[in-house]
Image (tube, rainbow, N blue to C red; front, side, top):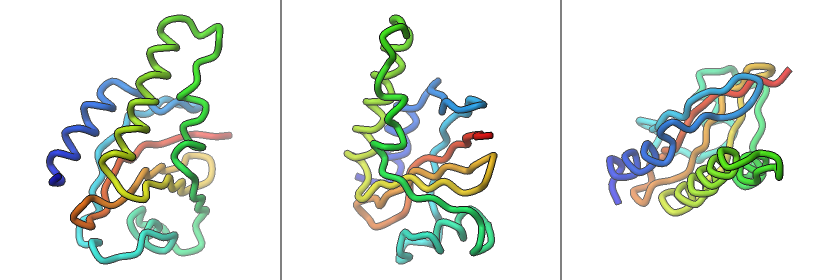
Length: 134
C-alpha cells in the first residue's frame, strides 16, 4: 500500500472527528519527509516537532491513549456511542495501515500529539493533533 492510499484512508477515518481534551482539535495526516531510515524514538520525534532535546516528551501505546475515547459512558447517549465507534475504527485502521504505531506527546500544557508508525515502504507517517491539559 502506498503513502497516498494510507493518507486517504486516515483522512476518511478522521473526517469530522476531534481529539477530545480541554480543547477539541482536528486530526491531520502527517508524513515525516526525509526521515525514512531514522529510528522512531524520542530524539527523532523531537526533531520532527522542531523542539530541543530536553523538551517534555512522552511515549504511549495507542490503545492507552485512546482508552477514554473508545469506550462511551453509559450516559453518553447515541451520539457518544457513535463517537466511541469512530475512535475504535480509527484505532483499528491505524494498526492495519502502519507498523509499530505509538503515540508521542510533546510539550507541557499545550501538547503536540503525533500518532506515528511505519508504512510498508519504511516511511514514518500517521496523524497529528493537539491536546490541552492544565
